[in-house]
Image (cartoon, rainbow, N blue to C red; front, side):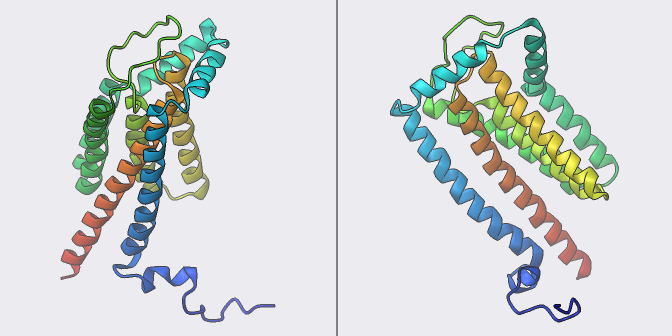
Length: 239
């Protein structure tokens, strides 16, 4: 049986924080860069496919399939999820939580939260103005929107805002089950917000996937900035 007290082998995963420059921040930065490159490549592939009409059958088929499950109860549930991803609701939520974080002295976390939310909104509008994809119009529903479709603003905003809230919450929680529960709850909420946009026929599935990809890239960048600010603050405190 292996000796659990034996020294760790050089180059083991447990030593990554010490082997990489900048310690734990360097580890996160490396993982973030790899994820960012892959997600950006995925977004580019998706965008090219959309405007080459590769996903028309899939997009229309999924919207039509979900439309078959319309019911008063499902409509109310999906309206709730759509509301939770609305810009005004997210802005109010972020303002309240960021203000609370500032009040208790966690100014870096507050700044990161505002950065994630505000940046996602600005980038989404920029991407929509670049791609100018017209929204689907397969059937009449309760939502009538005239803005561009790709990428989904609800999807991008929800993954940036609720994702950052989950990251901050997981760091503050102590119990492992509580951390897992928060992560799962945030993931399900983000997924349901994106699903609600397809359900009501105001976004194609590829719009939602694109929003998730773009939002996750910006979320990773926002977390990296928060970690960099914390690393800098710790260095100044030790100086």
